[in-house]
Length: 326
Length: 249
Image (cartoon, rainbow over all chains, first blue to last red; front, top):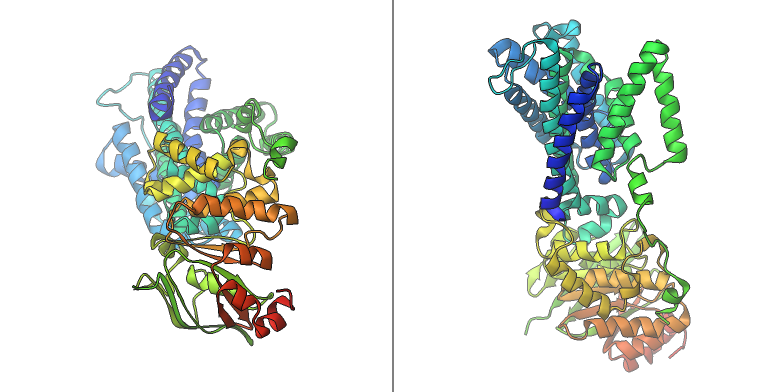
């Protein structure tokens, strides 16, 4: 089974396995995995941009927008259904992406990265001084409900949120896989290699990058809303540059080949952070730094490139083939 | 009958350097036109203006009677003009298959699809035909970055041909290719497009190639056309011999 149907079938199997793993996993691991999947979604958006040759250092903008949209809907309108809250997070990301995307689609390299970073810091500054949104202290949120179901007890609530986050993650990952394998997905990859040829094929690089940006913004909004529900608290640090840097870290760690690798990387990083915080307090950033250095040195294509190494790829033509033209 | 390509008084200057001066040309359907001239004569500038890479300072470019002056490259392509480059412009981290499949998919209007896979059954049939026409089958699974220079030239032309252009512009298709490979390369290219109605303009420095494959030649010098006609007549033109061929004809 290949193509779209194969991807969707694989996603269904992955979700079943995830649900079982969550049920069997120790209690402390479930919230760690929930948060990791939420952040992985934001990193997946960066991966979508990276495939087109762009790296955003400001995904915190959309992460924060999604979190605050969900948070304000819960506090101001009493909405507690997780699906609605995440949908609102996605819409917040979408609206911001549609506004910012066309403005940035013409920029490349360090200019694009810096502009996204600058935008996130503007959002951070505004939130710090907006007291109706909690100012620098942020807002606390209560546990969400799931299609009218209110889990009793923190353990049930945690597992329910894990199942919900897992479902959103698997759907988003499957859709991204389908997109990456589509004509537009390959066109993004091609634009990373050679924009001139893409234009001479009759396609618009600006349009390709703009759509990737909007996809990344929506994923950022969804990830932000899920993180807010997982943490039960939101504050302006969601938009701070170190938060955005963490997503870039995840994207580099995973590479842009595999969608699954993004979430494996997210879980690894959350685990390293959890254990480092417990056993080496205040030094976990150092542990993450060493982790990243090792990846760059020994696996520059990221964790996802391991799947390519296992495939029998013929990279170079044989001598006989090279002589073929003569 | 309207000329396929007509340029009217094209002007282009880069600072003090005149790259195109009153370039007026009419190219009929089905012609094979050779563009000759020394470096800086204005051949590539002419191609760049026609394909939308450069905007002329003045003048107009008409394609099948339609004004395409100043359109972006992708708009010019949509009007039926494709090109290859002196330095092949390919997707080097993708395989040869992926390069051509992508070009074919975009032509079929699937560039807007985030759903349909790039590797479709219809695309594979067209791809096989293209690989055979350009004798590229042996390289199909190879990453473009590792292909020999001559093969990359062919792929670059094949990418342009996938667009089924009315007008195909080839910028020095044999440059950087070993002398003994030039004729086989041009044979492959001309054979690959012979069953189409494509009009071809090619820039070339090798006068033997021009004599063999062009049915009309334009000689450029200092941004001007100094001769226009059958290959034999142009290559024996006194001005062409003085400024372009150095008496090679």
